[in-house]
Image (cartoon, rainbow, N blue to C red):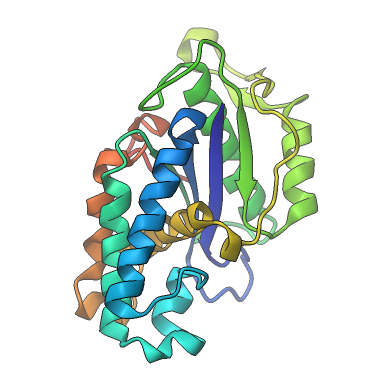
Length: 255
């Protein structure tokens, strides 16, 4: 069984939106590595507690962590950025973990373009396809299935989308199959998505981190640019799911 934890960065609106990009990230972990990697993240969090005073129960919500820290303002801003850098490095060492990334560039998209639905559709397809072709890093069972664990947002919409894709999932033909589409139904994902509050899941916080790093590479804030942190995504290169896209060396799917 593969578990995919999902979070996003940026705004999914197309009209009067403050952001040009919307990024959606899935952190994929096989059941045989789940306990091991959870213990690694807990160990990391304990080190951050001891070094910077970040409590284990406090959420690393990357965008707010830097710009709207609330109670975490007790930790210096530069130290909060260091925590993000250390978290990035920790994930990069989990070599059997895979990160699928979707980016929607809203520039030129019509107001009717459903950013959230297109991004989620692409993410579900890549998760399902990579699993069915046995292309994820690390251990695998003979006939694996997957389950999706997103942050608590757009619950009904995302649930309806996955249910629809189990029956109707049109994929454009490649040259070998001619013009038109094939209906490649999603058959290897079990249950509806299981939504969790990100404050209760270190792995959803990891997905939030990766989505944030992609967004900051594309459109860095002045502080991120000043600190050179727009390049932090490069640290995740060992665990990026590069087979998700043949058009990008990091496997990032651009829509």
